[in-house]
Image 1 (cartoon, rainbow, N blue to C red):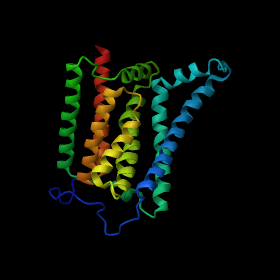
Image 2: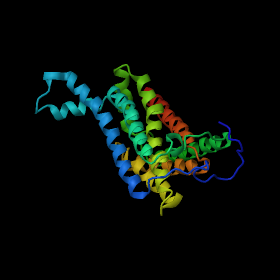
Image 3: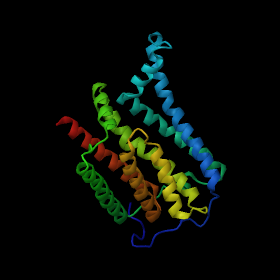
Image 4: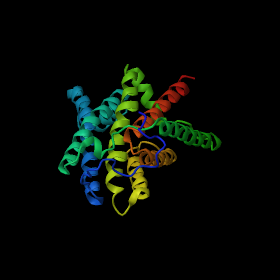
Length: 261
């Protein structure tokens, strides 16, 4: 993971001498919508499969309750997150191939320095601890109720390991490919420049977490800003994927400890 020159200044996009064509503002927005739709359909397929398994037990009057029951289970959520990854990767691959670019280059899937990793870990720790301290100071729960409910049902279904895989591996890859990889890349080369691309991609990323209340959405947005800056600083989406995964792992472990006490 060490770069050839970890002390070099912030790199500009891209590092290679051959600059691929990049989707600009509206092209990135359009394909972003396509990618989101692909992710939604991939996840919806899992929900549909679980509903299909219930067969004749579902009628028009009980359909809504059946859907709510299915989508609230940790097993369903875990599998839907995992199936969303190949759907997103395929949609991104199509969008990038149309531009004649390499998948890894367009999404900045390149190495990073240990120094940037250390900076990211420390900064993320300080940010999350700050939000946790504010939660306690204002009498709020440290972890959103959604996490506790999902963890409980995953345990009941014997799918805790699958939940960890989904939240700590599949979700970070999917979301970082989409937000800090594709959206940031296109929007940073428009009138938005880097600051605007960081803010807008973070807003879109926050919109993927509407299961949380406004307070935790604020935390998600601030983490998105940090990851966006680290994406810019390191020129590596792999770095933000790893940091995203570590953050989710810490949240899962924290939730396990809180719900076990």
